[in-house]
Amino acid sequence: MIDIKISSEPLDVQSCIAWAMSPESGGIDVFIGTVRNTTKGKQVVRLEFEAYESMALKEMEKIAAYSLAKWPVHKILIHHRTGALSVGEIPVIIVVSAAHRAAAFDACRYAIDTLKETVPIWKKEVFEDGERWVAAHP
Image 1 (cartoon, rainbow, N blue to C red):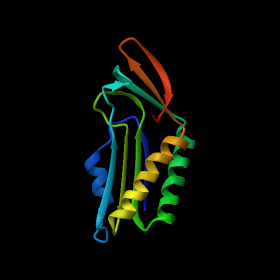
Image 2 (cartoon, rainbow, N blue to C red):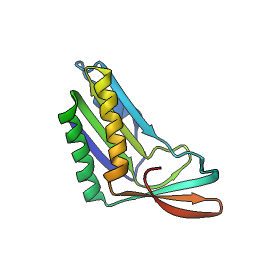
Image 3 (spheres, rainbow, N blue to C red):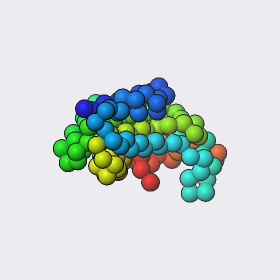
Image 4 (cartoon, rainbow, N blue to C red):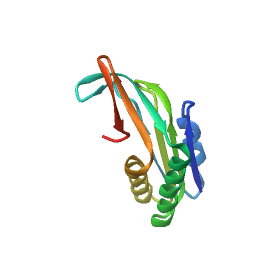
């Protein structure tokens, strides 16, 4: 099962985890991306995320479908936020459930790494002394 979402509203970690839980799953791996307060030594005021939503959703769906095909996982959730986010807020949550932890860990790592490489979501870093657009990955 797959749950994909892009939203301008805050993401709810607990509801994401609850969705992924199932009696057959012995492990749930969760990745929560948060806005940190510095980037390369500069103070971050906020991050702004924009997405080409229809294409981003298709790419996120591909990531999830591939994960289900490659690893014996039961459920995968990928939620990403758009808009302006302050330090400490959550722009991305990925949750993967599986019978065993190795599959959940592997699929979750694949999902976040591939999302950052292929999904058309862009990030603007806003600093105290300026701003710059960067890809949504380091």
